[in-house]
Length: 367
Figure 1 (cartoon, rainbow, N blue to C red):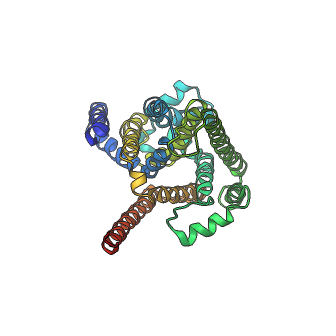
Figure 2: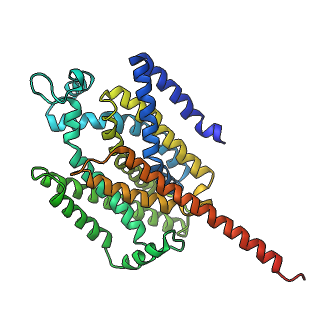
Figure 3: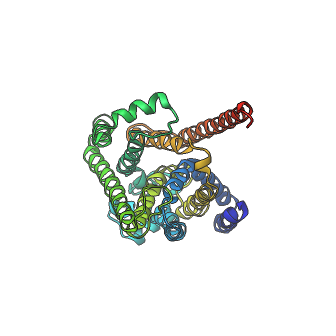
């Protein structure tokens, strides 16, 4: 099972490292490996969330996500997306933007001798808008999860009161909108406030639209087939398509911090595509498949909660980073900490359940 799931990822990792070495020698190989590790560490919570959505999809849409979705993740988000930002913000055509990325100024300076900004500088300048969009998308994802009543809770002392408060209609939008206004007012520079507000609102609109359409069509499919609202009912057709779009936007939101953080290591788009894309993104897909195939989320019931708390932390970090630099290592460690704590709590819960079951058998009367 493990070999079948991770075999392709391992092969692609070796291929990517070889390409990196041929492209730029030992330095490029080392940078590529570091970026791959960075992406996996930052995106483990992404894999858990992907798995919670993926198990609701039909086998056909699962295959689409694991094939076409990989192409979008590798080339779309890790290569084309940064270039597209430079196209828009600098008014360059695609060829000029790619040439700018491949030919940085000497000594990794922020500008060229003529004073024109480098590719890295242009992308970094767009960070407030990127962080606002991704932060608000992830914030609504977190809030909608944590404000909903659930049979199983992890941090019960906090999750149960929040679920009661969540009975207030549209509370997630109210809290998210308030956070966006405060971010724009107190963290964004005066010249960035309008763009931060617009980008954040777009992030909220995209989340509400994609999540709502997926839920609507999934409900219609269940009614048409006579199915019930259970995990056994897999999303197909339009519902599956919108869940696929939801996953792609989710992956994009998660990848923002990795793409921006990669420029602290290298500004070479080829190395970034190899490290973040071919190694990191594909390994995250393999972890997602493993979680689905092994039924890990059912066995370790707090993992989903831990991943959503990690998403809430990431959303907060993205919004804070609009005004304050946050080291990417902190971002990765926060996610790993929540996932690790949730996993340990799940293991302890399972052990208690086994112990209680054994005691019931011992005390049961013999017939």
